[in-house]
Length: 376
Picture 1 (tube, rainbow, N blue to C red):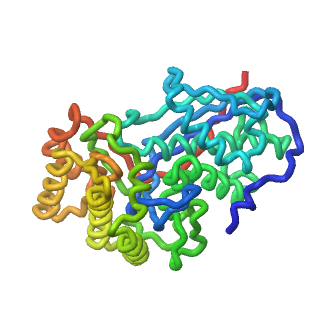
Picture 2 (cartoon, rainbow, N blue to C red):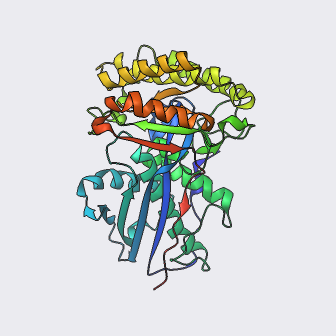
């Protein structure tokens, strides 16, 4: 695979203005990606569950302007202008300009809304950047295909599905690495792995092999331990893997765990699934604690929740397990058949460790979807 495939031919049509909208979910990694090379290339492969309800809705209004060599855009979150978001989006635009050469021809109004609290530890960069990438790809489709209307953005199931789906994931990756895993569902792999057909560092791919029915509609209850801004950004954390004493061993471990999950997914081996997923979560934070400079993102309540999950599993035979992103919040994963008893456990024992008693119930989903705007 070569990134050159995503550079378009000269556009055929001109579009003066329009509006496109997409909703895209967050995702939760089972095998973690930690450490990256230039151009958002991962140092190890990863795989994630795509979530269903934790998502970002983004509308992109675009108006033709004179190409003065500058990007022109404004950003709103929940109706409030957010100039603090602009540097990251400008960096994204610079990275994708050669693949979307119309960017300096338009002024963009980006309006976004999350279904989950901002800075809650849920990967808003993944959902947000994937939604924005899809909106921009919908604009490009209008410049390529006159039949595409601004009120009806193309979906990844429209003509050119394979190319556009790959390009959407490719573009999203250049905004936020994990965003490339939010385009499709319910299991998406990212990063070259010799045992995953079609795998590549350039974009996420839908997991191509058999998945046992026990993983259908898998549940994710997100326990909100800390809803503030992280003290260390993920970008800084990724960069600290350069020269890390345990980096090469970690990258090897991630590949081996992904190999092991192939058999787990096929046979529905939940005991092994629990073991791999929890080990991955703890290893991620071990890398943070042993980097230079070192840092700790988990909180005392994170550890209290983990201890209680272990005790619950031992006493009940439950297959519930935890995973963590680069933060303090706990993702409690479990089969749908255990939903009632696990939620009783959450309400009875875990909410006391959550900030203001808050948690979010979610499940695996199918990926991004277009939002059809009403014609005026």
